[in-house]
Length: 442
Image 1 (tube, rainbow, N blue to C red):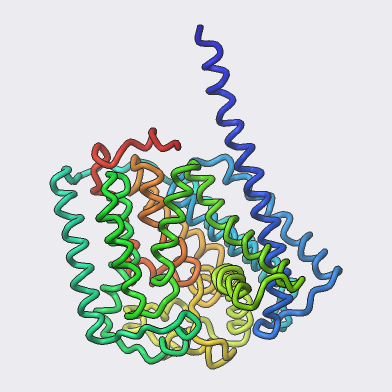
Image 2: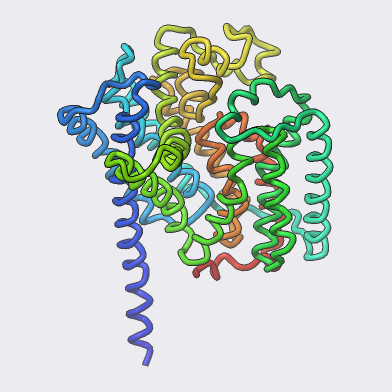
């Protein structure tokens, strides 16, 4: 009597892995095609050689070994490390393609091997470490309600204080021009980063999980209201990004939702680029490609190219860019690394991911994989803290951090953007109120 259900149950994981594999393959191909268009349209900003059949063929062959490593995403269960790992996988994949076109004079082969090894070194702990820790404190349903109300109230207070220092309704195209004029107190910068990066997304995920949609909308409104204060694209796009992740998590299981969260935006940009090439869409539509495919996806990958070039001729930081360490050790860089990069390459102030900052800048290409492995272990703490929580809840509450982590150092994200705070909230979150991890299928 139970033979048919048992066969169906056995076939379901196989079908899931097959679909995930196809989606991952589509993502890899789409990402590489996107980078071809990035080189075509933004080569004047990046130190890249023009497209040619020879270079494209060489780049395609160069990414195949790392592309094959993506099979691990079809085999592992969803976790915070899975989501972060897939975003970082895309970042490294992009660099391995772009390095074939780089015109910088550093050792490209050594840098590519280091990036490959760093990606693997990060993924191993991020995907495979995640045991359930003993819980010394768990909130009750009533305490969770009080916590959520406190988060919303604190967010309003921080927002009001922020508007007294800075409020500029700048167009997205002008945000970078006015952002350099912002001068917020350090404590307020930390408060805004933690509220917008961790607290409000956590509250939003709780309200969605509890089907309290009005306060969930309030959280989204508060997030976008931080844009005139910070003038960052993360604040501007936060509501639409979280809604996008919410829709994906409704119709797809969480691993597929993570993959589609990158595949669909990149694919849309590629289609726009194709239409633009044939004069079928105007310049204002092509802005989407510049915002998503270039700035949000390609630039974090290209940052490794800049950092490899800069630190091939400059002294390493040895982690002295971390503020507390700068106070107790000598440092060749008095200002933030973004200032030195802006002065050297004139592309504005841009930070970079852990692979560039905690890796290339701090210890060099030879030891960068070791640094990446340590960072992967830190991310795995999120796996442990969130163990037992519904995957959709983990994905939504960390949704903004996925975008933040590919653009800023891990040491900055841990404190300034509230990753450690989110880990604590996950640890004390009541599983019996928010749902069971086993029920996490659409």
